[in-house]
Image (tube, rainbow, N blue to C red):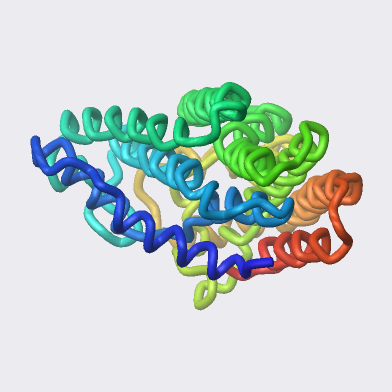
Length: 324
């Protein structure tokens, strides 16, 4: 079994070598630029890992893995425009460096380039794999739409939020693992179980992200602790707090949400104090553990050698026992 870090490094090297045209420059330079900003390359590495788990040739899975990475960065390019974000991974975003129209059009061509890469699988696998890719891509768009709608809504329910993060984040992990498994020679049942493992793990990961944003160590978290509170992001913690709050606590939460000018530290401390009283962290940790358990249940049912399953268990533990 290849180490995850080695697979990530393989992706890094392959991304650099992607042969995009040079003309027109304003169409293709932004693609090379956003792909050069790095990132963990987790999604494509998972596709290669799934292929490897079932005894497949990871080189045969490289093009679809790159397709997942190109697709992921296409969504980031368009998300940055929608969010009016100035920075991506500490660097200026494409639409800021060029303009919105360039960001839209370069993103469009990235999606097409992703399909061209995905189509480089064996003919016998082409239709099932394109179906998975299509479902994954539609899911991400649905998740992004729901995320934007939730920003405008006063009331969002926990089940709606969980469905949104499933679509926006978890389905890509599940889809990448499923595609990799099929290329590696897995049967449909095992590929489906591995996809379920990835999807539930993705949900647990996102819930942990919500928790770390409030309760993480700022030295280790790598970004501003309390950022979600400052921006009124509807996370599991905020939604649960509004669901459990007394009348007075609801009034106080709504006061901080509505406030236009405030001291960041004061707001984070005030909202966190309400979270602590309502014990929303424990609710979030319980939900996170529920999804982690479902991931492991799916994993146990997969027809793989025990050492390969242990590899996936260790990977999942590494993903969920983290501080950043």
